[in-house]
Length: 306
Image 1 (spheres, rainbow, N blue to C red):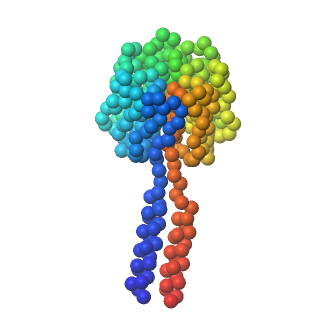
Image 2 (image 1 turned 90 degrees about the vertical axis):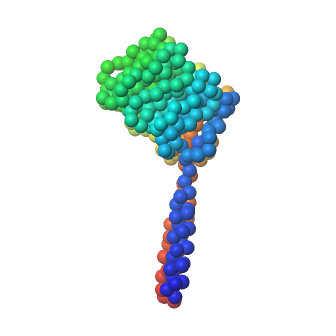
Image 3 (image 1 turned 30 degrees about the vertical axis):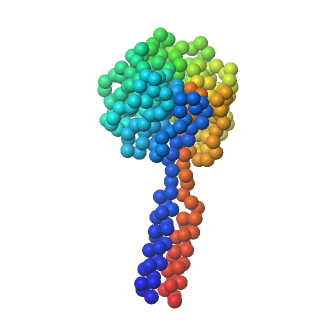
């Protein structure tokens, strides 16, 4: 009797542990597939980013992977461990685990000549880079014809780079924009925000209450943001993508390459660039886990009564 009890308990525990490991962090891509930028390598990723025609991902161990076009070495990723990566037009930036920066790919405007020091965040524009230093102050480098790297004073918690404009969220949650403003893309709305993204001539923001705002050019409905509450946003050239609080994805704006035809499922992160999107898929634990555990307890109790 005692041996039968132990064996049956062991079987139940193995089943529960096997099902508990069933979770995913694979990357799903859609939109423009011309250069393979939506075809991520196999394996799990913790964050992803898109450039014009290439993609970057950070694996759970902190190492980088790149896919898509490599005409300028933009996916020839450096070694080491990273906490963030971002892609511009034919170049890439990375924030290392120690807070220092790395840049690789095309460099005709100094966009990969990253500044020294330690940082907490980075962002890429078309030909320029932005960073938030440890003290919250901003740094900018690369193409500056429109003043997009002439950063404002003050401390910041988030940044984004567009075609020739830049955006930042100050420590108090308010927005500021600088650089080109030919379509009103830096005429930021009032209120407080927790995330911001920049497309070619438009911008979108995630308010602290989870709702979205859009401003700038609207020729492709790219600032007609959806209703509801969200946890993350990003912008491509002429479209936006956002992660709803329930884990589903929505996209809007220009759809020539199917970039707003979002996949079904649940996701933990989204990224946009050019006319493509990436998302990190989440596979929920099966609902039967709790039932398995209850069934195991009932089996044990019945065996004891026997």
